[in-house]
Structures are given as structure tokens and as C-alpha cells.
Image (tube, rainbow, N blue to C red; front, side):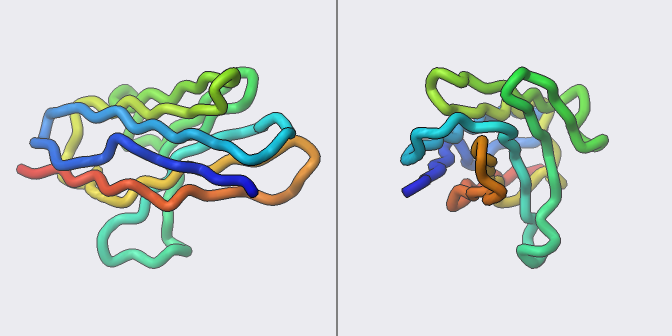
Length: 120
């Protein structure tokens, strides 16, 4: 059974930093793309927005609002994806979810989410 577990969220003042981690387990197949999404307060699941994605080979993509502040990276040997978040703003407050797609499958798996709160 595939499982993704996020960690690293918390409360931080504006301008501060956090590092999120997400570990995937439960499959013998290799992971293709991994990504981070966020769901802001009051938004529905369908309004979850992409923050950043990274391919198995390391190609990255970012939402415009986080470019230059957030960095996504991964460790394929550990099936782990990270999100380094610097210069955090109150509008970054959200529940952050990681996801992963596996080779040979069309399914995308999601973690349970980790809360990030940025205070003024």
C-alpha cells in the first residue's frame, strides 16, 4: 500500500523559513514526478494549487508566486521530496500536500498534508 507522509510544517513569522519533507513508501516501482501543492484556508480540495514539481531526472517547475523563494529537490534513493521555503509570507499560509506518480501507473498518490502558518 502506497503511503506518503509529510513533515516539517509549523508556525513561522513572515520572512522566516521552513523545510518540508515527504517520504513515499509501499511500492516496488520507481517514482516519476513528485510535487507539492497547497490548499489555502477556506478553499476546497478542487482549488488546491500547484506549488512546485520535480521529475525523476530533476527538472523543476514552480508557481510564479514562489519563484526565487521556494526550492524543490528530491532524493531518489530515499523516495523523498523536499520543499525549502524561504522569505515566507502570510499568503503562503495553507495546508501543504505532496504527491507522487509511479512508473507504470496512471494513479497519483497524495499525503495527508502538513499545516504551514505564516504570521505577520
